[in-house]
Amino acid sequence: MRQIQVLVYTALLFFVSGGLTYANAVIERVEPPFWWVGFKERDLQILVYGDGISTYVPKILASGVSLKKVKHVKSPNYLFLDVTLGSDTETGSFDIVFEKEGNVSLTHKYELKAREAGSAGRHGFDASDAIYLITPDRFANGNASNDNAFGMGDRLARSNKDGRHGGDVEGITQHLDYIENMGFTAFWLNPVLENAQPSGSYHGYATTDFYKVDPRFGSNAAFKDMVVKARAKNIDVIMDMIANHSGSEHWWMKDLPTEDWVNYGGKYVNTSHRRTTIQDPYSAPSDRKKFSDGWFVKTMPDLNQRNKLMAQYLIQNAIWWIEYSGISGIRMDTYPYPDKDFMTEWTYRVMQEYPHFNIVGEEWTNNPVVVSYWQRGKQNFDGYVSHLPSMMDFPLQDSMVKALTEDESWGGGLMLLYKMMANDVLYPDPANLVIFPDNHDMSRIFTQLGEDKDLFKMALAHTLTMRGIPQIYYGTEILMKNPGTTDHGIIRTDFPGGWPEDKINAFTGEDLSADALEAQTYLRNILRWRKDKTVIHTGKLMHYVPEEGVYVYFRYNTADKVMVVLNKNGTATDLELERFSEMLRDVKEGKDVATGHIYSLSGTTKLPARSALILELQ
Image (cartoon, rainbow, N blue to C red; front, side, top):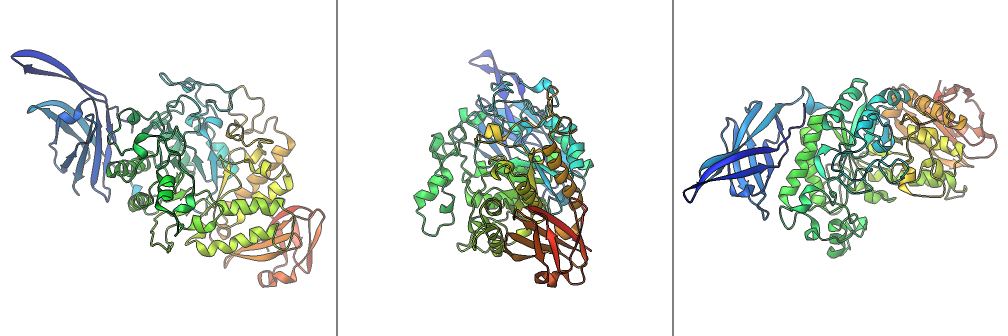
């Protein structure tokens, strides 16, 4: 399946004042470029863009396809066609004709495709998965010919931390074996859609075309090919989407359809970033407006999802990418920033078409009350209903770092991690939260932990055995760090080995430091073990109040038990086991997943200094 190119030139011949006159009419864009039959929602909005297109009268003469309404907007260069597909509409192409003065002046063929078998029943990512987060520009350059794109600024500049480095979709496809061999079962890509911004565009969060992969990352076809090849290895792909904003160089910013297409009439007003105004029962309406309607940054105009045309556009775009590419999940950027009622409709419509799909929202706060507000099934004080299945568990990430780096005390240290878990009562589905040691917007976990290898292992052990869906950022496995800075360009350093000129190759292990190899092996061992451990995926959790610098918890079901022990003490520690007798009854020993060492679990057991043990109980 390939993206339809929708540039149509038709010569018009008509009489004016008794003489012959020629005029050129152009349809520059039709979005969505094509669609499918078989969705539950049979209404389709087609955006048509071209110089003076609103002066034409569109008609559709096709069996099973009805043009219900034509919507004109302030700009004369847009038409919005409300189309309904019948329950028996067949696949194939039909003509949309555009008449002027009673004559057919333009014809555009629009295609309706058949959905892939089983598409509606596709299964999204869940707690049986381990997700690898990748910043595409910084992972691997698989095709040097697309390092620059004709007509686009922000040229290749690998020496510039904020420039484009050349990583692309093909580079990821070429290293699927590495992702699989590490033990990951899914990967999430930072956005890959076109970002035709003049500079700093590599991160992908300033979309300039919602239907096109950035040519410096590849093509729509290349993205789909990557998904197909990943699925052949039982690896899911999660697509990063942004409903809150576009890039300032998006094509429509030069010719907005309506005055309210972008918030504040297209004038830059920065958001307050005060996310709690949404849940605060006492917040002023003006404060809520400034948060939701304000722009994230000057180069990211805030989209007005209260505009029904915009809302439908964004909903259809998400469904289009799911159906076209075959992805298994979405990570929605800045989830609380768009209009919250729209986000309810957006998630409902996506999940209506794909009931077993998964979507995770970003709500960056350390307050679980705020995070839980957005998860599907939550009974909120204000009656707000969400259909969002998953959330990023920022509160747990924050408490984990503090628990590992702060001194032990009655209420601090590991107790912070223990106490945070009690907040799970707030979540309708804590097992469907995405948990992580770090991501693309924060310091590397190795740096957050003071470049302490022992604490690093504790963080990984906890993330990979706790309830929820673990996510690991690329490079974490080789101790990537950002000492002395929080600059995103440094945090998102190139993965060594992704470029032919690299001397170090983390894909093969060539010239990696001993510490990096050890960390990579440690993570790989746990990930591979975790793959088929139902007890970790869906098992129950029981944890014990931390005492004397040791935190113990169990994952268990009717068949298996796993005991996880985090020991922060600087010396070997004797752990009295009687306290855990309700879980250790009839258990004699445990095998450490990472090392294979057998620990006796009778009476006391000696914990290595500053260690993380994942013990399969036998």
